[in-house]
Amino acid sequence: MKNLFAKSISVVLLAAATVTVSAQQKATAVINADQGTYVINKNIYGQFAEHLGHGIYGGIWVGENSSIPNTHGVRNDVIAALKKIKIPNLRWPGGCFADEYHWMDGIGPREKRARMINTHWGGVVEDNSFGTNEFLNLCEELGTEPYICGNLGSGSVEEMSKWVEYMTFDGESPMANLRKQNGREKPWKVKYFGVGNENWGCGGNMTPEGYSELYRRYATYVRNYAGNELYKIAGGANVDDYKWTETLMKNIPRGMMNGISLHNYTFTDGWTNKGNATGFNEDQYFKVLENGQRMDDLITKHSAILDMYDPAKRIGFVVDEWGVWYNVEPNTNPGFLFQQNSLRDALLAGEILNIFHKHCDRVKMANIAQMVNVLQAIIFTESDKMLLTPTYYVFDMYKVHQDATMLPMTVNSPDYSRLNRNMKAISTTASVDKNGAIHVTLVNIDPKNDIEVSCDVRGAKATKLTDGQIITGKETGTFNTFDNPYQVQLENFKDAKFKNGTLTVKVPAKSLVTVELK
Ligand code: AHR
Image 1 (cartoon, rainbow, N blue to C red):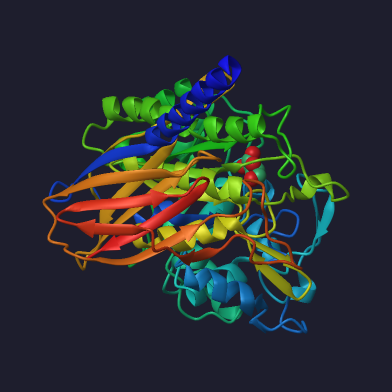
Image 2: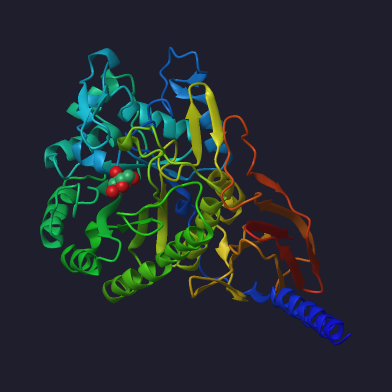
């Protein structure tokens, strides 16, 4: 009897404990809908395509004679997928490849183009069949801004200068004439131009002082021809190399650079222990998302330096390589950097895009690495097949924030705890677009607990909840395959209401949700 009593007491206590645990899975938030100041630059949704693995060949370019349906040699399925998410800019041709790329090898009749070894990436033959004309025509087809990365590491000032002349000069000149000879009468519009890539490493192993001097010299001859004004981007720091940022800010005259970049990748443990893209445990899941949050600290500290030298915020911070980097998939060329892409990576992308939005007063562009078949790709291809990765759907869901005004939003979120460390389970973005529609995105990284967010929307004209979308999956490690391509995708979401200025959203564990208020 005594035993039975003790048992029922413990059942009651256990039930109470359970109630308490689930009662904690609530968050409160406030959006000040009438206090938006900064615009989320659409260029934060930029992409990156390098001559690396199947990033270009097979992934984008199949050639005009391919049996794979194509437009001037570029896969139609990839063009359609990219148009859908409105990619605002595309960085090319590298990466490390850029500082070994000689653009003249990639123009003129394709059968006559130089063949070279891609020393950085797998030692394969590069036949230069995808070059300047092919790239710029693709950007026109997509309605996206080209972002060219010039060769400062192994190329000459003359070569860089002539490239700009070839692409953008409208008139009589040796390079404009060469372009016309190659079938393109009018120049293209090229706005974004990077003066080198990772010049502290693969782009020449330079010091920041040495690079600053070279930047000044090269950028002088990167001309603004009539009707085409370039936005020149200096090759910025590796992760937390604040000295690099400060030296460039000190040594490069203001009028000579419009943007300064940062490269920061996310690993499970670090460069020497990147971890696997699939088959991970919860500790590894936690570490990737925790390391992803480092982007916030990096932007805060680099921005503080930029603020000292450029308080008016004229220089844009350009995170032109970001994303998660795992071990390559077994039985693939280690130089091709091919990795799977799971729901974990979608959550990471959402978390990092929310960080970029938070810093949108300074972050003017970002480029996830890389667009097709490489690292945190949004698209995979395999001969004539194409699939969209979980990360693709994040770019689809988040496109409503492109060029919208960021709204201040504060959240009081429960923690997601592991390894005796805590992270906030919920991260968010709220923005208002040109038509007055408010979009609220909530990312719940907690893999087990749904969280009900109750949000006070102040100062909004919106009265109705008009749409909802969700990305989630069975497990944090769920991924799409060619046999099973829709394990993780964008779906309709109904578990939200908006009444008397309070938005209530039940955000399922391991999910990204966006709702629209009008
Ligand atoms: O994205 C892969 C490589 O990572 C790029 O080529 C280089 O810039 C960076 O180190």
